[in-house]
Length: 246
Image (cartoon, rainbow, N blue to C red; front, top):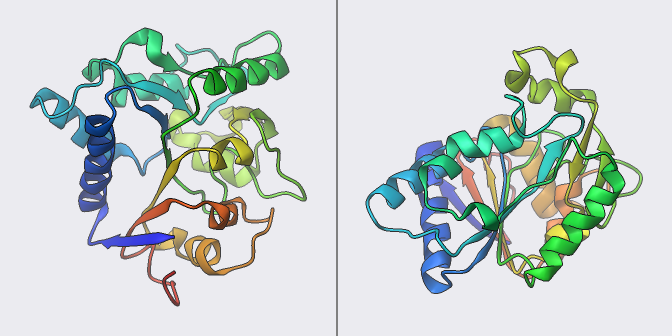
């Protein structure tokens, strides 16, 4: 793993935005895997600025988001689709036909997962996958468990994950759906390059274990050790427990 440490979340966000911009300049039709949550906000803000300044053209880019809550549709204010529209999609020139999202309101959620997996494969796979990390070591909605699903799947969310996402649902964890749809670990690991972002000391222990600990389904992020091209973008808090760097 290649590790880069930044002073704060804003510096980190700008660096990741530049990494994405370079990917798109190299390949205007790049397939990007996108993440939600608090950590990518600075990155999306910088991408909006770069697009407005004419630095990056998204017109041929294809996107796939990691995950979505089950039981709500794209217009729900707590949906990740709505988050992406507000934070990025509505402010850049992405072709709506090239934006791909899991439909949490699908009648058959298992069939929706199969459809999404096939859609990723039909583009030739993801060129650059952006990830955050949960305080319990989950990436996407791949929660710690005895086993992990390889492909896009339904998942039962842990209570901590529901609490972490409560801000999208009026601050009330009980309003956060109990299930979600998520790319699986195998899907993520098939991406040609992975960028994982983490900020804050709350993530420090998980980062240390993901980098230096054993590969275990109890810490899904540890499976990134198996990937040949992973970059970790960390602020000083998130990097504070690293004992050594690979």
